[in-house]
Image (cartoon, rainbow, N blue to C red; front, side, top):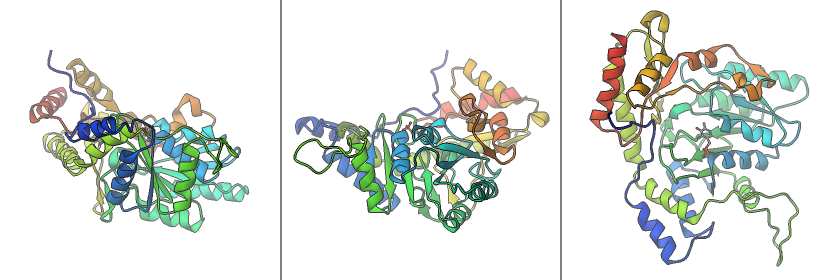
Length: 375
Ligand SMILES: *Cc1c(COP(=O)(O)O)cnc(C)c1O
């Protein structure tokens, strides 16, 4: 059996141990420390944002974003349906109601028309949504100018779930610099990793300092432990932040390597009947966190699932497109606006191994199997 090819394994850059060792030598093993501050500074400089809070996960960052916006029981929060469950779960942590919205066919991200419909529906009912959560799926930037125009018009904060999109760009500007707040994930499978971690960013200093306050148990400024609010333990350890500092040294390479994977796949597979890659609009640059495509199985005679199985039989991990949230059993009662685009992407789409450490031989192995499967 050939070696296992993973979907998106961690890829260390080399400098991580230096920062981790420094933390040990100086005994900064605590949850906060100089690596954390430096990591926040590095990421906010990279995406050109005013303020950042390093936290324990992308999910925690999203939860803090909702807390900072005072989302509470009974509120409406709109969320892209085609995403990982972590985009939506924090809405429920707050006792708010998630309202899911369809994707549009070009970027696979939140559909501006369906978004407008959902907003107007709730405004008419006297329940203006408290926030909109949009995703940059697999690194592909959403249609930000339309979405931000809508959110600005109705004065609803937009939260960028940029968990998958560090290094992507929209109109030459880094993703994560657009919404009222934005979040990144540094989970093990993302484009860079701190093993587990995340970050919340904003240009509004008050939102970020509020998030930091909540993330460290909501301790009042008093000589003893006093709490006027419920707090959370969402900090990022100084050790993990050290991994992040090392990873930030190679972020440009990681983006280039993932984009090169996409080019390889495109050259090898784009002429297969019915196969269509996720498209990059002209004003966008995707980090191509995962290379993803859809298959018209009526034309091609093969399905995303049959390719996935074929790859798995050859010790290669691939993954179906996210199952939309409005089709998840746990969200079966949640309202949904839009058509069947997200559902079709789920049914026809597949993500290929996309790690930045893939060799040319690995990529060739993947494309050979897929090409043979079509024959
Ligand atoms: C990974 C991911 C998250 C959650 O990040 P964690 O660090 O794993 O908590 C949220 N949203 C999307 C779209 C993700 O891919």
